[in-house]
Image (cartoon, rainbow, N blue to C red; front, top):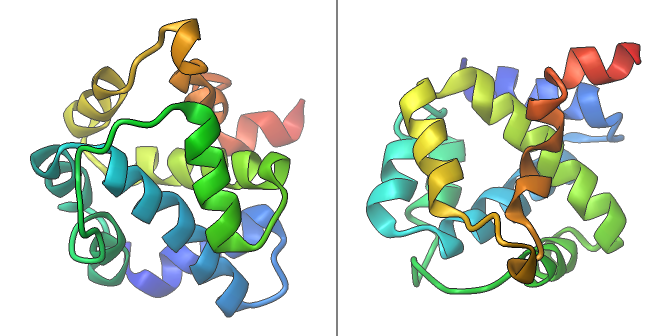
Length: 142
């Protein structure tokens, strides 16, 4: 999948009006996720993504491995997107679902394993709700 296909799919799934909004949404999710992940995990996850998208997880991140919870993740994504936290949460879930279809299962599992599922950490499993529901196409049909 190349950059245009990736961004086009996100734009379609989220019904965003233009490429600028779409790229900002992808950047917000992946940059913030890259800040949370250890650098080597971010690089593993990014390896199968289009070069321009890969940059958000790796090259654009100044400090990997930051410790923050789900609420802070949403606040950061929302701030970058210029959206409400509820919208940012849905956007992040949809981006993660597409990432799930592009990267090797082992790299995606490494991502999941690196994020706590402790309710005290605001339950990072919420990031994977679309994936766990069977993917974007399945959630659209229900």
